[in-house]
Length: 346
Image (cartoon, rainbow, N blue to C red; front, side, top):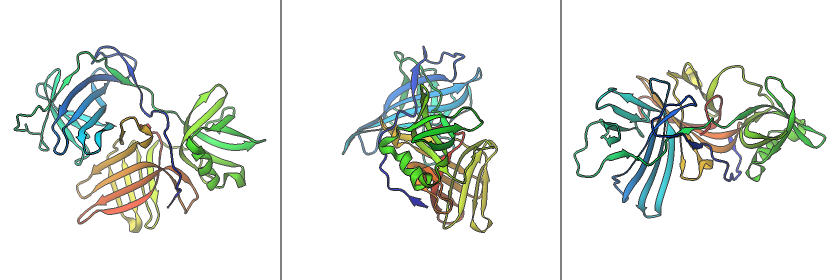
């Protein structure tokens, strides 16, 4: 894989929150927010971790959907440092004293809380047991905060981009009238990527990019993938990553996460969602992580924003990929490119 050395600047926010009334109040408008729960948790090498946690559920039964968390590490040598997170959570032992797991599929990042009462969560240790300390381990619901709900994820446009009399015209998948398109990405990174993929010589290319319709124009600001050998998808793929030397591929759909490598190596596990994190205020630096395990192996995939070109196909992707597969012995590491399918961009 060859990664283009293109510096990428800030993009519009990837996740937006809007006010939705009192905390925990169910509406028919979408996800229901429980929280935020706030507090300052202990830190081994800083003055404390100022934390805000909101749990989102769906449906009348309160099915866990995603969590949203902000952590600010106070008093580090470089000053206060903040990170934002969004990913899966789960609930066990429902009822009195229930336990909430943040990142339940990722042993390296999982944290657990006991619900002490309706408005108070208490941090547990790695074994989900109480921590013997006089320090405050509680996150408490902020009574003055309005609940928030997640808005609709960013729109991914798929179709064929052509040059017509000096203009860019985009014909969407599934038919429909073509419309004008314009690259509004930082430093015209989309234009640079598709040029490298041969757009100028052929005058047309299949393109997937995030953007928005403004009047009669499509403004594209972030690349997913583009290439002459690609076509409109016919299956519900969540996300995929692949690489060469050695050859490997990982993909996720509604049925499973599947890994295949050279020599017939394979690994299947139940479908899992991606988790996202980024420095506070810098969603343009968002990275996604997938962590899962079977009885015989574990895998960990990281997708990060980077223009990445597959040298074997000429396809350009909007994500670089790093994968570690661990069986008996040390992990085997792979690098390559990735793209999203139906997985939401956060």
